[in-house]
Length: 312
Image (cartoon, rainbow, N blue to C red; front, side):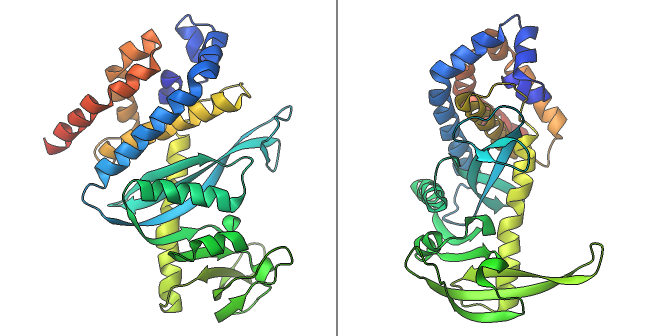
């Protein structure tokens, strides 16, 4: 599985190259996948602590991404434009040009506010204070806004939900029929779009910040934009697989997230291809012996190696 991540190959193809049956790999994952994923996520958070050593307060971005597949439906998955997809959500912060993953959870089968609460709790458990938290419009609900009211927040809002199609900056109260209402500062701004024909497209933000409109919009973009890049880089380590097991899919995504987090140590120093080659050389024994757990145990000397590399 590690080899498949490093070379963007299918898990099934790489297992055969090591004379291992793909079914043997699947059986291992079904038996130990959850435990290994949990341990890998703990290591991802250790990477975050190491990168953010000495930092007390972080601005947090929360978003989700989907990994699509085509074929027979798997119960409990979210629907995509085509086929179905496994959904995952993360909380990240940008530090010195590095998008650091602080928290992770599966998204399928949970409400938006449940996902946000899980991620925020993970961030706080690391000992960080949250400066400003920014969320994509896909997380906008009354429940989410209520939960975020204890923090300084900026949340994207679907313009169709608030039905304000002009420049606006002022108070707004929701009109949901299913839950109690919530009030917040609503900012609506327009941007000219030239696709096919030129027109103004409006975007909305909910916030409790007492700052000038332009500064709120810039803050939202500064906090939110890096997370999209992090998803592209994580998926750069994501292997292919024909398995539709949620445990299997979870483990390969978490493994890709773990490798991306390690890449943060050398980002800007070496290219991704060189980083992958370095890992392949460092962990070739673990790959050949099929002991993924040994990969995790090797993380401490790897940190020391990276630290010496950067200082040297």
